[in-house]
Amino acid sequence: MSILDIRVLGDPVLRRPTTPVTEVTDELRRLIANMYETMYAAEGIGLAAPQVGRSDRLAVVDVEGAKYVLINPRIVSTQGPGKEIAEEGCLSIPDIYGDVERPATVTIRATDENGNEYEATGSELLGRCFQHEIDHLDGKLFIDYLSPLKRKAALSKWEKAKGEYPGSIRKVRSEVKGEHHHETEM
Ligand SMILES: [Zn+2]
Image (cartoon, rainbow, N blue to C red; front, side, top):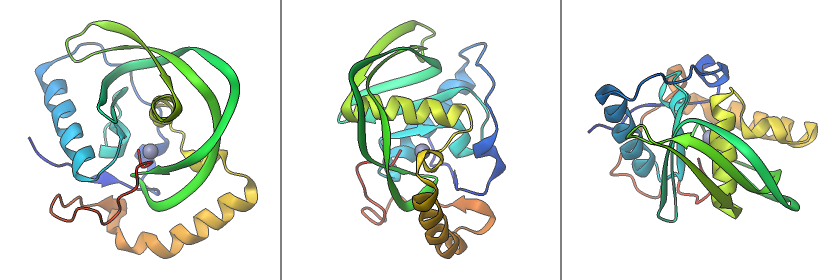
């Protein structure tokens, strides 16, 4: 297994819609294993394929031990009570956070690494993570949900920080634990 480079805001791959996976191959399973390793090294709770430069409709999630491989995921329903606002961060926009309003609970349908279709329901952080990852697969980022004023503030903070990531690439070093740690980065 290996740790992959994470693409950060500015890399066009993050805005490109993904292509559905047609077959779960060994190559795809290797990518999934590498994505988990990368996500853990970066101390995130979710990671989508575009974040490692791939346009496959694929993401991995581990929210407090609830692990899901999301191949071709889609939201099949959202449940109340209403929407919830909570802070989000993104491994592709390090150290930038913002409050995002989303449905409190969602049910998704996806395929796992063995090619089996499944349904899963997530609330709170898990439900939020499902939605954040599925957004990545549609070329959407959490900053898109911020109010114009907050988005402007986030982007001007990013303008100052992005020099740390030449070529829009974030090198993840597993030995530097805690550098960017935040439980809402995904
Ligand atoms: Zn993200």
